[in-house]
Image (cartoon, rainbow, N blue to C red; front, side, top):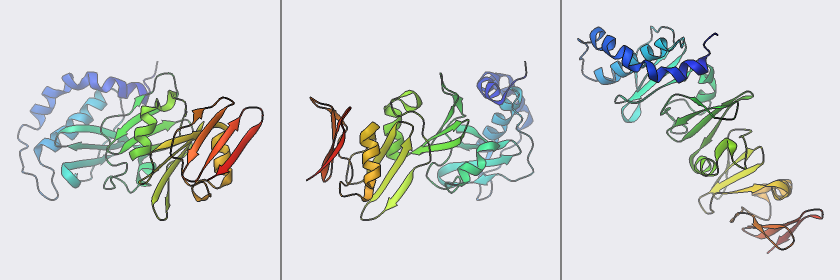
Length: 259
């Protein structure tokens, strides 16, 4: 059976003990101090060790003629043919595979704090066709239809709600920022939308209430932002917004009540 990239990454950790001695022997004399263009021996050896671990697990990392890059806050990285390996002082050493590189660059690449550097290798999400990778400010979700990020408050809310296997389902697109009197971030998921701002709690709208709110204009509507989760009523469901309420009675539709 051929070893896929997914299986290879899953096996990478198991290969760490095998290659540690080899790394120590190969780079025993590598003790240059860290400079502006050189991350120093700890970072260099961590990146080299990770590459050997991946190769031992069957991941085609490839070679590199490119220099190490010293990033912000102690981060360092090096681009290889099969991906970019990064580390922070020898910790959080991980590879961002080459197939995710353009998606990641869309956020401003590594020096952008959102999502920032990966904190670990990607891993499969049980019961789904997705793989997930943790970053400094969120998660990357890699699925059959492409790569999507959840970041900051929306990410924290989504993960706490169960992520891919929770009620919201998979993310359909990257987060959208609406700049006005206050920065509002919203993100669409298979079964609803998550809304976040500095003036309101991070909450979701789902089902018929979500559809009604979005059709009414969402952030730009007279309702403003949602301020509470949906609640059950005697006849159905309702959700409070800054300037009103949406009521949903199954079988009878939704009603907007402005306040």
